Amino acid sequence: MATWNSRGLRGSTLEELINNTNELYRNKGLALVQKIPTPITPVKVDNEKGLISQAYFEKDSTVDYIGIVQSVPICFDAKECATDTFNMRNIHEHQIEFMHDFEKQGGISFIIIMFSARNEYYYLRFSELKDYLERIKSGHPKNFKYEELDKNFFIKAEGGALVHYLKGVQSDLKLR
Image 1 (tube, rainbow, N blue to C red):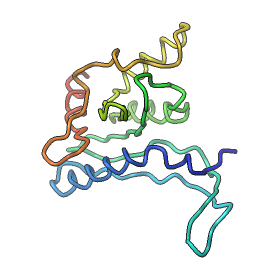
Image 2: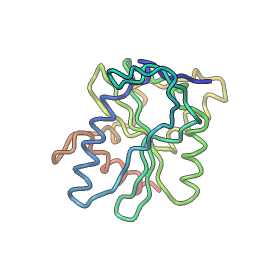
Image 3: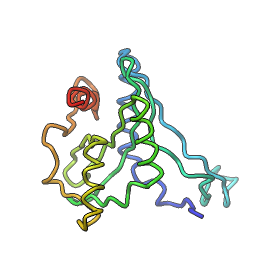
């Protein structure tokens, strides 16, 4: 059974930036996107400080965010990467299955990757993710490199949005 500890805070910087961006989108009437909490059961609790120091995950989570953008349903996950090589093991099978099923229902699924050493963000389309998964099946290592990524899907801060992923959604829609 998976347990939560201090490693459970990985990605919190990216998620905070996305949460701020989502609030801006909501205030401007552009999108309504919510963070999906991961259900946990506390094991060790410091009642004096009100902190959970250890817990276990009740079930596999789906993705980090679900919402709607101008009548288009979206779901996505947020991942951080400290190097120029993204390990595909960071994306779990149950997340891929959820994103696949979401796409079959007419939604758009993607992953936002923060390359923290570069302070750059990338919109990984679900179709691109599937391509990387297919090449793993043919013996390729379970990763992809920064240099391989489509330059058109890097995310820039714009109009007060720190991680302005709506441009990626717009470009993604054009390719469908």
